[in-house]
Image 1 (tube, rainbow, N blue to C red):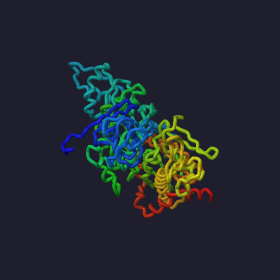
Image 2 (cartoon, rainbow, N blue to C red):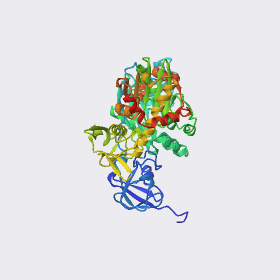
Image 3 (tube, rainbow, N blue to C red):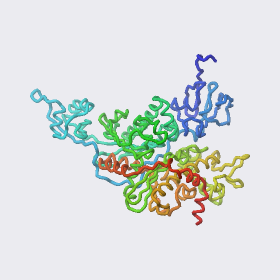
Image 4 (tube, rainbow, N blue to C red):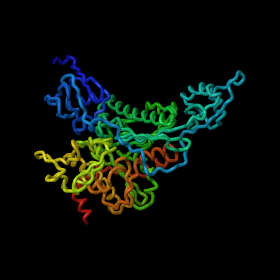
Length: 601
């Protein structure tokens, strides 16, 4: 083909979605689908590393990276590695089709606080303008409110004349630090939005600013997963150019706007009624939202552009809320220990301030840990990757309907339970942990992590052994290895923080598990594989979405924002990768043998 000849474009039909898209001959099915808004799961961002984007052709043919032809029919292929050779019909594997995921919006540590929001509001009535009294509208409002008002935001000034004349010279005035930032009809409810911007999910909470009460909450999948399930994949995409970083910022902005609109509508309001916003997230998530440089964040020594809390106009981030709404982005600790962890510490403060030794952990793609003892807090992050949430697992999927979430032993065989009792289509993180823990108990998996043979639930295919969970859903050797790497990273982080304070794991009085994954895992399974230290069950507290609770507290009260800044300042950040013991301890924690021996002793 001539170098200047146009590249052929073909029609790709996804019959089960009733969608057709264009795909260039030199474009993969995955990237064409993502560009066109067809959501195929791709934990690695389409780099061919995870095996989560499985498709097959029913009509037409595909070619792989080497140019080999893949016939339509039964053979599944990676969508990120195949291209069309003509018009075709594509089926997406059930577990590779992005679904509504189970995002945790609940927590056990919700406590009422005295509301003291950053935005004040009051209803005022002013005398109408006349030929005798022709003071400007702002001056009339300022006289009614007193000397504390000094100026008015330009967008509020634009709205003021119409609102006053439509409401018989009355209005609800929203102000902040002596500045009028919003104008509305008198009596209009004042609400705010708190956002937990997670790597996997984005969770929103709508609060009544007058009472501090939660009105509604909702969690959705972070649309940035289209560029990879882990932080490294997204950072690598962002450093590819301005357009790439803009894509990631737009995805975060879209999620926040969608949550604001849906939550407001759920209580009979509009997104333009949202007067204040607070956001927490890990360091990378905040950088991508604020369009801060991330290149230096992705390489040692992993330095942020800025750690302190920031306040800016919502409109400057492209957020479609009240015209004068502000956004408070909470401050980070250091490295990848972000403001989501600070928010979790804020929410669980009543637990870890009791004295003794406490450990707060939020397990996820990026696991954050803080250890408290004798008035000190040391914090670290572990790049545990997406395996513990079902990513980079051969039949892995997010926590959605049909995901195997529990695996139990009955009469020497594995028995499963799925989310919503739906037909099994894949396995999520808690199910993977259960399956490996059950495999260890039954002897299906040995102490080194190797899948054995001679068991009813193990299928042997040549040299390949897999643990069968359901028809088409299995755990393969590489899945066990992925979980071993993830759990070893987490456990090594715990060990090194304990060593830094001169403590043993048995000294831990309270082990607080925050986040969605921590809320749903089975503690016995987590201890069986060595993800968690073997402690008495009563020492554990699974508190759910503590970060969401904390960021909502920051929305309800400026005193809580001040307290969050104080907590972040107390945390001493520890960079684990520079610890000379890290690699040695990591390798020691890879296997399962030590943890089973501890139980027997």
